[in-house]
Length: 205
Ligand code: ADP
Ligand code: 5GP
Image (cartoon, rainbow, N blue to C red; front, side, top):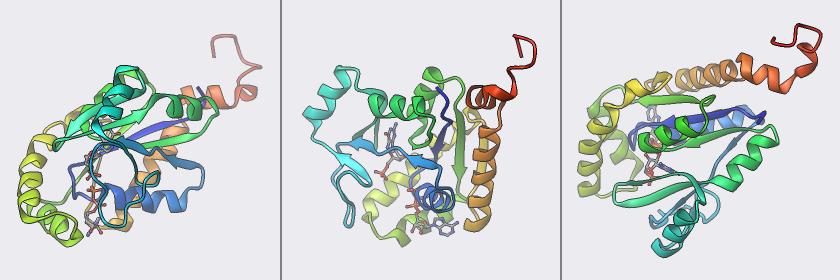
């Protein structure tokens, strides 16, 4: 598979969607995987754009048929990444970003050892709460539950290859762009993508 796979993980509200959107605008060669979820759409979300919104029965059927490369239950809803879509994209040499939780990132690491994983930390728990409130999509009960859950999620930060502190948004986008660029330049990627630069060397280069 010649494509580069990058996972981006963060507790809800840390800014990973904003960050990834900023990067996608800058980097036309990157594609975002659209996950399946049983969560209800938020205002402004469109089926097929933010998520494929499905009911629990359809999700479980797809899961049981091996349709997901990874899946997890997060905040009481199911989320999963399409196996068929992802493998096809990577075979075609596309660079793909997955915005998934730490449980999913762990499964992706198992399935694609060459992937690059990034964890996004908020500058503080207080700022995380402010951002959740500022986003205006969750009620106070949900915000309290998400802040509480964030601590548990952030404890998995050490499992990730890279960490970005999302304090200044432009700086964080720059940092994510650097990680993606470095991932593209790894030996395994370069060798698969540009075999002509290696072919005159010894067989094992
Ligand atoms: P996530 O996808 O991690 O749940 P979002 O991207 O929805 O988070 O961001 C949560 C809120 O925080 C949004 O209102 C967004 O505009 C804001 N935000 C994101 N990054 C920053 C930042 N660096 N500084 C200030 N606000 C931010
Ligand atoms: P939200 O409902 O706020 O969009 O997302 C909630 C959480 O689910 C976030 O941590 C997000 O990264 C995670 N998530 C979204 N899609 C997937 C997915 O396909 N797989 C996994 N494992 N987590 C996902």
